[in-house]
Length: 377
Ligand code: NVA
Image (tube, rainbow, N blue to C red; front, side):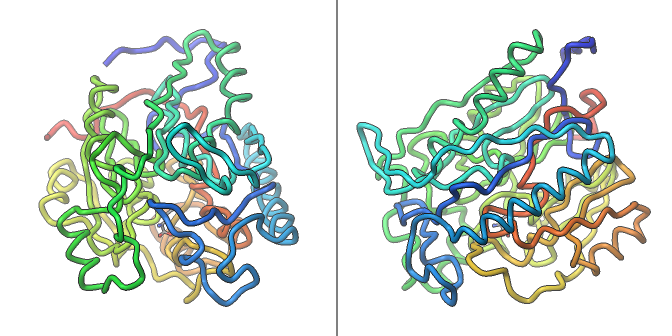
């Protein structure tokens, strides 16, 4: 592995999910939309059907945007008090129709979850392909920051994965139909048949979790095997491992399923466990996988398409300190017993905009270097 000398102009450096965090990007809720249905996703039908905007797409209610931004600002203040520099995503007007020569979409989505778009691997930030048409242009919210990092840090590797075509060939017709039974869905995810096809590499950055030299990538609705192959070719000094969580009938993004907390310790969603043959590498290398405590809430917040398991979408500040949503006392108690200082952060008003505390951030700088935690492959 190539070593990079640390010098004072280093802005971007982060190799894993737990080393001491010094600089992070935080998302914003402004102009966020419920995106119109499209071949790869059906937000309109996935959010709870009991609220305003039932069956509608378009801008989210202003009071919900203001409440989310207030909690995002509160989170940023907590981070800054603990010595973490916060850089903000820069929203554009997401409520607009867009097109490429091959498709058009009625609305964009938003930039609350930078984790979905930006994958930081050491001195590199890689813009993901994304896998929904409504999220194709989301990189624009991060370009002002990435341009600045590029100017300030001579060793920063600014990369973008090939922009996907996202024609109908990239999606399996009828896959998301409400007429499909859970039994059929269970069979599909077990067989690794997802809504996205293997037509072209497709991934969201939030399907990747980083352990130094090893990256574990969830093969899911939003990340196909072609993208996992692309990532291995793009990062030849790393080992890329595909993982699956067949208990999840709607697998999207790894960080409410499987989350490393510190060297040797991983938090796993008890409803979405790794198949036994995929657990081996962790056991062989001395990693303990603990099952996360039951979320406090039985229901997700209004207009939220994520699950109650956003409870385990925590942000690790260093191997002894972790941010957890303020109302998730079961998980807080569990982490306290595991030896962490828990920092409670009110965040339920943000969930509907695309996720929890980990989703809402993207690493810019963590201390530390690239280590090999899996010498027994
Ligand atoms: N589909 C996931 C999102 C993870 C960040 C869930 O809500 O469980």
